[in-house]
Image (cartoon, rainbow, N blue to C red):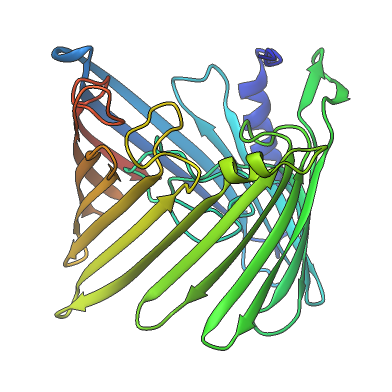
Length: 374
């Protein structure tokens, strides 16, 4: 495994300096929006079985600068801070100017292909097929990477996107960039409005690893989205080796994802939202064969917003083959202004050797905390 370059001790000061420069250098007509979001949590969790517990406190924060209401260009700078990292993490740094109807993105950001929040076969850039995502967050898949893309409109809801992503970049010393350590990745996707449905397909040649995910090779996907009677989508993708057309690799990498979601207003100010997603791997096992991995996973969730201040949610990641799952009950209470209290209880159900098991690390977890937006 390649060692990460060591960052300079003053990188935190450097990040703050950049932020101040961004603010002070804006002309009077370019309004900058500053958002600081902080989360404080207390967690009790099992470690080695249900008799071994640990308790810890933690906190995270993100600082975001966005430009104002300009119709010509959008931009964002987001820096994340957490106790797990000694230095701030540059999450997003991009500009998105428009040249007539053509949109161009430059910098570190995310381009999400396909459809699906938890499982998405069309996300061939970053990958959305793992089951270890965080069900507590509104955006379980949020990896970013350095990229350049161009969106060319073909109609009201139709467009073609061209994208290029560099290989991993190593730092030599504190200022010199040694260069990319692998081939760049590039590809394109088409989104076509076909009346009652949207059709999209895409191709990506993955050179070096992107955002730490995926292997080199050729990847392609195709999918449909519809909006009646509920919002629904289905997507399939597969990959082959970089230098050879391998049917074995295609069968092993072939995945299908699909899902549906909808919101239902209740009364004057209450709302019930639900979502169901599924991941199918035809080349995997459907009889608990651990050597090939399991072939089906599901993600159901339901959220009830009670009058705008309280939100209750129940979500699960389920493995139907071995009948195990990870279940999370959550509550959020917006007490006043930008302060919200949050509480989560998670438990894994399953037997020994299953994907999810109460004896796994984190098999039972309780989290209580607060979020505040400055």
